[in-house]
Every structure is written in C-alpha cells, then in structure tokens.
Amino acid sequence: MPSLRKWWQMVRARSTSSNAQQQNEGATAPMIATTADCGLVDAVMGGWFRNDTGELFREFPIAPEDVVLDVGCGSGGVSMFCARRGAHVIFTDTDATKIETLQKRIVSTQARATQGIVSDSLPLPLGEGIASRVIALEVLEHVERPADILKELFRVGRPGALYFLSVPAEISEGLQRNIAPAVHFQPPNHINVFSAEEFSRLVVDSGLHIISRHSYGFFWTLWMMFYWTVKSADEESFMGATHDQLSPPFPPLLDEWASVWYKAINLPNGKFLRESLDQALPKTQIILARKPG
Image (cartoon, rainbow, N blue to C red; front, side, top):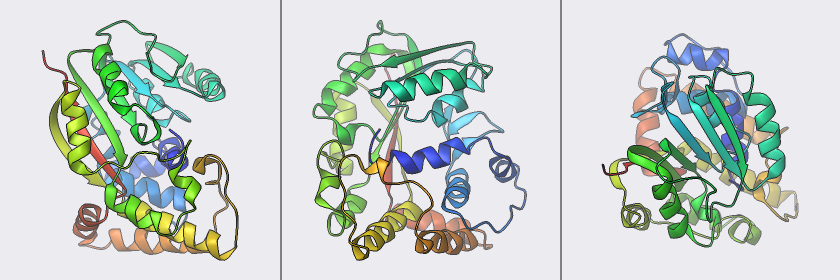
C-alpha cells in the first residue's frame, strides 16, 4: 500500500495504545499536538479501532473464529489489531521486508494462526473460500488491474464473508493534483483515481454486495495539502514512492494543524464538525461489502 501508507502506519501502529483505549472508553485525553496522536484520536472518533467492541471499523467486527486476509498489509497495524483479537491472520504485501518484520511481531499476539505471503495478488497463492474477513485498504489506486485484484479477493472469500475496502476520495486527489509533484500520480504511487460511482461499480462487478459506504479523513486531506505546500516552498524534489517521504519529524506547520484539529474535534460539538467535514472533503472513501451466500 504505497503512497499514503505511511500515515496509515502511524495511526495503525498506535491503535492499541493507551490513548486509543482512552478514546474508546470516553476518557479525556491530554491536549496532544503531534500528527500521529491526533490522527489516532481522529480515527477512533471516526469509527476505527474499537477495542471495546472488537471492531476494526464500525460494522466490521473481528472475532477469534475469523480468518482474516489483509492485502497490502504494510507495517501491519491492521493485521496486529486482528491478531490481538485471536483471529487467524493472513497478511500479504509486495515488500518481502515488511512481511518478514510483521511475522516477527505478530507471533507475540493471541492470534490462533498467522501466515505472511509476499505477493502482488495476481493471483493470490491461496485456495478458494478461505477468508471470513477480507481487507484491502489503499491498494487499488496503485495497481494496473484493479478489477482483477477484486476478483481474486472475491475468490478467496467464504460465502458470507465481509469485505473492508478503501481508496482515496476523488475530491482529495483532485486537490492534491494541483500541488503535489507529478510523481505522486505515477507508478508506484496513485495511477488510478476513482469516483464514488467507479469504486462502487468495481466492487459490484466483482460479485460483491455493498453493505455501506463511508467517508473519512478531512484532517488528512488538509494535512497532505499543507505537506505538499511546505515541501514545494522548500524546493524539495521527490522520487519513487510517496510513502518513503512521509516520515517524522514533520514540518512544524503539520503538527500545528494537528493541534488545531485536535482541539476542534474535542469541543462539545466537535463530533458534528468532524462528521460534516469528513463528508464534504474526505481523504478516503470506504466500502463495506459482503460475498453472497
């Protein structure tokens, strides 16, 4: 999951931290200002990492009896969340180093079984109908054959399996195109930009039934816009995968934005502000789907 994988890594890696637990329990968190911590709080408020209910995302529960397939696992935050709930977790990525690193980490969890696979998913080296939960977050925008990837995901899901799929929102991609370097929209980065209708059509054409759609990530849309603006002002050049560039320490403006957003969403009506802006200017569009049967 190149490109925006890095900010997902920051949020996912902290998904079981004390701050996440505080948010799940409704406790008052400190007035933090870092990108990573604000991103986590924003994510939990948006329905991610529900430790109390065992949901990776609202309406997407993970249980010990599940077989979870995490395609494009990256640093493994999602796989680790599922593993800590005792599930059988299969994780794949094109980067062998990431698979090796995650395999070393995940063995310390309560997962009843784990399997790491280096694969581009065309095809997946897995049998038919093995997974009860299939996850592919920020993957399809990078691949030349997204429809074929989805057909593979359909094949390996059990009848009745739940699917958690996401791609960048078209509106956010359009804004970034005006300021991001050209390489951000070239291989290995975002070579596909999907409208909501195109994303839905891909999912339906694969054979899946859409359960619900969600929008998320106003905070990250502006974060990326500020990031590209600062880097452009500094006249920095970019080559290769965007995610390789997105590493802390970040320019002060980005943590200043994180501090402002954190304070805003913790106001009495901050929930409604966040929900409205996530709908108006999302970074990510999400589809939850089910395989018939």
